[in-house]
Image 1 (cartoon, rainbow, N blue to C red):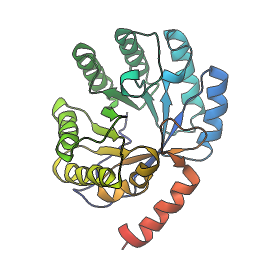
Image 2 (cartoon, rainbow, N blue to C red; image 1 turned 90 degrees about the vertical axis):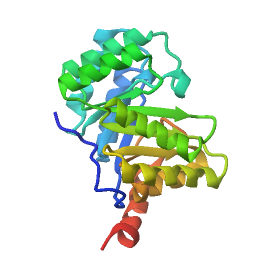
Image 3 (cartoon, rainbow, N blue to C red; image 1 turned 60 degrees about the horizontal axis):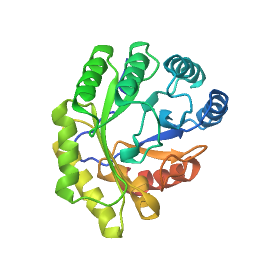
Image 4 (tube, one colour; image 1 turned 135 degrees about the vertical axis):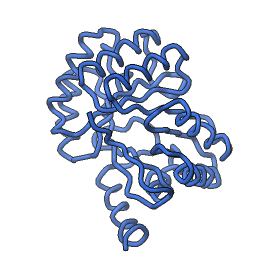
Length: 256
């Protein structure tokens, strides 16, 4: 299984991959959603399984994952359960049951990338690391702060922690209160892209943070999220508008 999210050389400005979320609550809604989203040709599709109302039924999740793969038009799928502690939807499934879901979708080859939170209990995180390696599934270790923007040093430390733990990708998302917070996030991104051996994904959320979603690639962020149908986090912009912005950046910033 390939690794869709790749690192460029050092802090070289890059055009980030575009990932579009899938947030349908039912199987029928998800199939309708993926058909509409895949038609817009994002680079990745993220199934936010915490939005799915049958998340507690493993066989149902696996059946739905198989259908999504069949409808994906070959676009890689990122499988994400975002916990409520990091801004996700409330679910009644335990951490151990979530790990079983991850294990099964990876072992059955239904997804290409998984997102695991740094705050995940250590035993579950260790298990998921082993399964990702066994199945050659790319895995992201992520950290989300919906309340504030940590210091540049703290953001960099989270990305370094992901690398030290053996993740394929490190991800940090923060909530800015000022434009200075956005610049802090982007400066930390540039340093991480310059010093780490793994790709990094970063973003500031909300209205102010939209700038980081548009220009994060110039600082080394490998991926950005955009709305193709419905958003999964504050500050995401429509994929059509994001592509226009990225084309302009390519022409005037990252191009020859």
